[in-house]
Image 1 (spheres, rainbow, N blue to C red):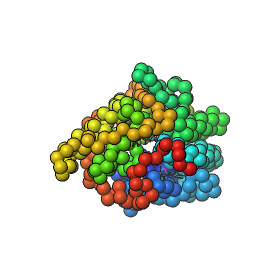
Image 2 (cartoon, rainbow, N blue to C red; image 1 turned 90 degrees about the vertical axis):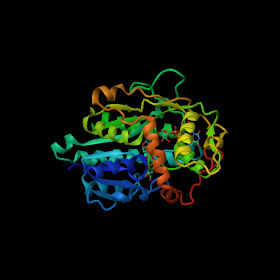
Image 3 (cartoon, helix red, strand yellow; image 1 turned 45 degrees about the vertical axis):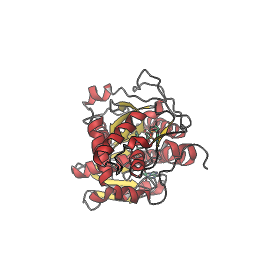
Image 4 (cartoon, rainbow, N blue to C red; image 1 turned 135 degrees about the vertical axis):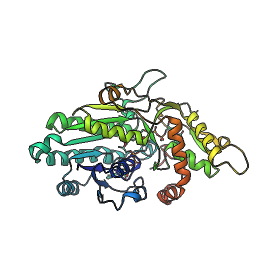
Length: 354
Ligand code: NAD
Ligand code: TDX
């Protein structure tokens, strides 16, 4: 059975990936995660005792530790997801983003290369390093056009600039040292286990608490939403079938303005958890100061992964959002556990914190 070293497996996408791999007995997994505010073992309770699952609380910036983990686990593949991922936090405090996303990726590449160079021929040939990145590296679109694999990089937030840097490092390690890498750039994910600082869980939790639902600016910004389980299947398809050295864009073919997303969630909450006074959650929608440098629109042309690797998302927004809203309603204990006083849905990202 394949051995996959996953970084960031206690985060949102990583925990969904680990659930999938372990649930389907598809690989032996070593999850390497520092457990920052965004990483929580509560997201992995159901796999914790599985014989195929191993966990190591460690920092990807710790070169010695990473070297030891590679030597002990002997992975066939690396799926690198660990990162600081929230744009608003990157506006208030860019340093962690540069340290983890750039230096952390460098260390993962360096340790992977040295490990890979020492592998016997067959295993060396089969080794893969998959770097998980974002569509935000391409900047912001106006009303027309879509991002493609050949779109020039134009990152505009500290977060996206740090992810763009990491993408460049990954390509450099392939070009210079021959490390067999793959890169994916994905649109906005939603689904179970997303930390309640991102738009969709923020809406759900504020609404349930009867608090104002904060919509930045006029709510006209557009994102392409992908259900996280579909992202997981896309990553595994790229890992197994993708051409070494290439990039694959992953999207949900599902562009929505933020205000439309908010209204849809309010309607689902009205259906599943009606307010005591019979009023709609939509009455809580409040337009607030815009995010500095707010990218207007992201959209993905996912033709390459569809035509070359036969991958398409299986969820439309209605089915994915229904599952998501129900999951949060059934898992409010998880929300309380992961918020644990460090963050309480307050507004961040205006650039006035240090
Ligand atoms: P997340 O913030 O939910 O999880 C990140 C995980 O990385 C956490 O478990 C955290 O503890 C861990 N981590 C952070 N710093 C670390 C360090 N120094 N050492 C070890 N572990 C560390 O993020 P996510 O939303 O699951 O995103 C995962 C990856 O996918 C990121 O690289 C992100 O850039 C990328 N991505 C996310 C989205 C999205 O919509 N969420 C879209 C495209 C790409
Ligand atoms: O309270 C809010 N109100 C609001 O209007 C929040 C938290 C967000 N927004 C807006 C900003 C964006 O236009 O909603 C949109 C989505 O915001 P986020 O959930 O913060 O996601 P985004 O900034 O688009 O980035 C996400 O997708 C790409 C992830 O956080 C990144 O990690 C990923 O790379």
